[in-house]
Length: 523
Image (cartoon, rainbow, N blue to C red; front, side):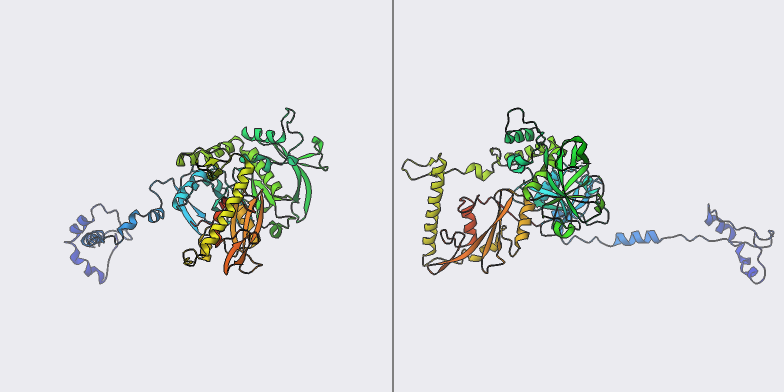
């Protein structure tokens, strides 16, 4: 062991009696000192003395001596907002962020196998939405201007797994009335001019009967037509004739020739997704605004993998994108459509006819002019005449009510429209068309906005046959009072709310009644 000499030797002289106690305290200590010189019996060795740590005991005694602090907000422990902020007890949950139409987001915990339909139902309950159906989860790429509505059976986490880690891709929660509209109005979505001549029409069926028969079996007729395609690596667009079949997407190298030696294979439908492109003229120099693109479904989005296609009008683009969905998902889309129809029937206990909403199936033309009670008007011409007479009578009643001297105008002020979901303020014409297109190009989708060209006037934007039409609502002076009208004073309304309520039952000058308000739901 170490030899100690000099003045330090005296320090350890008195340690002989303490050596045994030190060794006892060490117990099973494995600390040893390597000898530098030969061991000498006259030299006393120093040993380290262990210090017992009472820090943990002190902490325990301190924590046990302090009384527990009561929860000052016990009601928050049962709050759904409070609970949803923390992960659930089950460890297999994953958190996703979903954005609403007001650009605010909400985080929800979902299981690995939850589908887009299940997530939408969860968000409907969390956002306290009035209706359960016609909601959709959108995959949005803001920088690239790409949007895609997830199918009801798609697993949400599997879709999210294909995103780039540092991208701006997000989920959005939107209304979508046109998700299965091609099942209700197939002839509108698949015009006869776009159906391939090679389609099986030898059985004596018309084109409309062929389309309906194919849709019921979960497939789609072969589609053909010219599309503008953006050449890879260049900004130029070229017009090419395309064919869409069960086996994939093909292009013709020689005009519109269908000969096999002229066809070029473009893409496999099972391995791609279809996106609509927003603001395609500015982003990609597209010749029209009706652009869509296809990309591999299992790979992160890269610009070099995108193939942009541009149609001449909205009906053509909708036909192509609907055909892509049908060829890829087939019978599954038919099952999703049947589930979307059966869900409201279970909740409301109604049995609606195919292709009609609840309001359409429950409204009939009635005649109450006789003394024997009301009768249902079967003749369509008589029903239209009764509709016009009822509209005129309604106008006379409202004009009489508004002319009363004791009318309390504060009950229904002219600015009541600002509290309605269908009013969107000073949005532009193009933005109104985009909002209606995003929530579904179905007949009767509408919104009201302030006119940007005419002071104190409004515009009713209405969707009909896949097109958005705009009707000017002007102010009309009659008898010292101000009214709203769309037909130069033939029908007057004291406010925009009356105008909407009237046209939800009577078409008036519109091509279709107002059915689906274009709303903005906040999460």
